[in-house]
Amino acid sequence: MHGNCTRIQNTGLADCPQGPPPGPRLLQPGWHRIGNSWYFSSRCSVPPGMNTWTSSRHPKGNAVNISKFVTPEIIFGRGSLSQIGESAARIGASKVFLVSDEGVIKAGWADMARKYLQTAGLETEVFSSLTTNPKDFEVTEGAQRYLASGCDALVAVGGGSPTDVAKAIAILASNGGRLQDYEGINKIVHPLPPMVIVPSTAGAGSEVSQFTIIVDTVRKLKMSIISKSLIPDIAIVDPELLQTKDSLLAAATGLDALTHGIESYVSLAATPLTDIHALKAIQLISRYLRRAVADRQDMEANTNMAMASLTAGMAFSNAILGATHAMTHQVDGLIDQHHGETNASILPHVMEFNLASAPERFRETAIAMGEEVAGLDTLAAAALSIRAVKGLIRDIGLAKGLSQLGLQEEFIPLLSRNALKDACLVTNPRSASFEDIVAIFRKSM
Ligand SMILES: [Fe+2]
Image 1 (tube, rainbow, N blue to C red):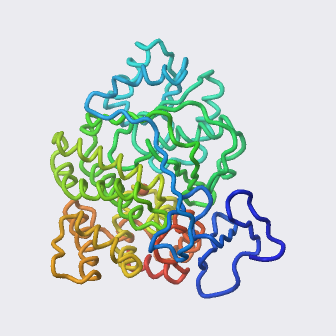
Image 2 (image 1 turned 45 degrees about the horizontal axis):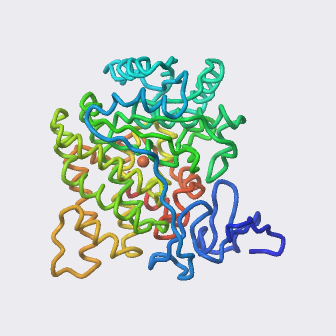
Image 3 (image 1 turned 180 degrees about the horizontal axis):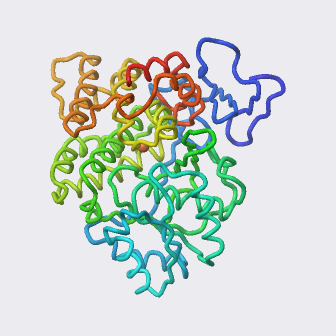
């Protein structure tokens, strides 16, 4: 910290435009780079708005022993889509902006949601002009439509894309400006309209999270917008909706949920409350993802994957993520592949990089994935978590390198520079330099 830096009230952090002193690591203990801003904290190494739980994973042992855990009201179970009308009415809606996508509309779920909303006496306006890896201009159009429609609440029925678009529309509709103004942590000032979210995939966890992830089409990267304001009022998780997704989508979304579970479990901002949810998610995904991919009508597998996605969402919403997501956010913005597939290419290599920084945590991950660790030392047991993840990725058909997904080697330096600015890197258990990220990208090709 320097003489001319400003302390941020009530946070223990200082806004330091100059950044840290020169050194081999861009993320030195106490320093955080979020977007284009540098922050310094003498207390701990996690940024404002995140948990500050004291643990052996903290580089500083003097972190404040206080944590918080935020989550919406959750309605879970087969047939729970029927609760959507009563739920929207209960949070004060009279006319609902229903965000969905073409696949969900074709499957009939959006129509069913609309009928339940109408039965509850609510008018609806449907918006579905969005794509996989949703784009900033789609959100701008959605916000204009929302404001012109006279709607007073948002409901999303769909996967991570409609959900993230609904949240981003809520930001622009109530706070104005451009989405880029809200990139990073805790930039949203005014309250958002009421929101109900119904996921149709088991993976994104956006129905319970403080995140929305939108592609900046000029910079060709995914922006992470993180704020407690983005947690919807009500999440309705109905496993019936999962049946109409194909096997590839089930595999990719399930692998995304596994990445959420593992990254939040080894995160520097993990707490006992997030640990419970992260480990449960890892365990359920290890048991049920293969079945869910093999038979899309297996409702026991679908129900457990819906629960896994939900618990992984609660874990990462509160503990944040790590280097895998800091890197996939850049790749997804460039080559427009499914986020779960890019996670599958990168996750095992990030785990190898992180292994020695959180060996006990990776040992617990291996146990949750059903590995036999008796008689092994901690590091050997921890390494089994990587073997288990690779085996699962292979079995569900996602064992592809980034080059197979369409990434060209020449983009690695650009993607690595951008990954260093991603908020998710701050909570990775091992500090990563530009050279480290480049090396992980090369191994993931
Ligand atoms: Fe993700």
